[in-house]
Image 1: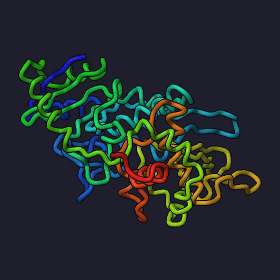
Image 2 (image 1 turned 180 degrees about the horizontal axis):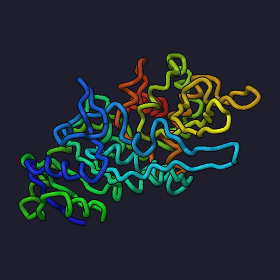
Image 3 (image 1 turned 180 degrees about the vertical axis):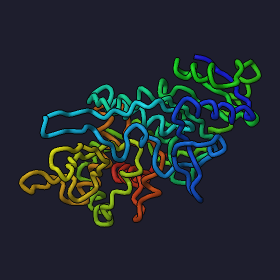
Length: 348
């Protein structure tokens, strides 16, 4: 829609104004790590963070949430909907792409009133990554180094003494008009942002040995690869990889009843396809009993199944699963090994 400029010395006032009208979520420093959490003061916000332990998806798809409450004596139920107005600040471009996939799953295909209520009342403010998070990130290879079209409300780019703000939606424009001290960008500002983006690009290396457009086809011919058994042999089935993934959305539901056995609630919580009992169904049958089969399923979800279903890759190159894995199972090594098996080596 438009490009605005916010001086850095005006950012604290911007965030402080937001705190008076919204629940504001942003990256916070916890010892040597960063987490997304509620801000109490503008001083807590760390827009210069490298990566967060858990993705910001936890504020639209919480780890634990109550879906509805029930009273068995009167056969009444009441949906519990969280529609608190929320602003999430400082979302990296990879996580914006991940949120776009979640939107496709819960807003366009399998309509979920709980997700939809949170998402419709959430304003996403992204921030351009000017340096790689660390050696595990591979967003450039996955095509997520820049924000997705329509996948944010505002997007910030650090210009040194100011932030360039790409205003994408009416929600974003509302924030700027009512909460920020911003001015319209001029020709000099456009020249500066073009220079910043040009300098950024070579800092990010390609990590995959092939073009990402080939990944779904590569996965299709890798169903019987011996690599899956090799990964299954070392996998601990701990679920850490899926717990930190911004695009994983598997969940389980359970009912909790009070001591009277008449009132209670149904809750949803994150689940993992890597856990031994994930595929256990009635009658005791487990249709994915081996860790090799579960590793194959996980990577097919990332590299093929989501593309088939939604036209979007299920991996955004954030590198969180590689950081979390205790036995060094990583998407980059896995995808490159599958490519090597099919071609005999990396492409020149």
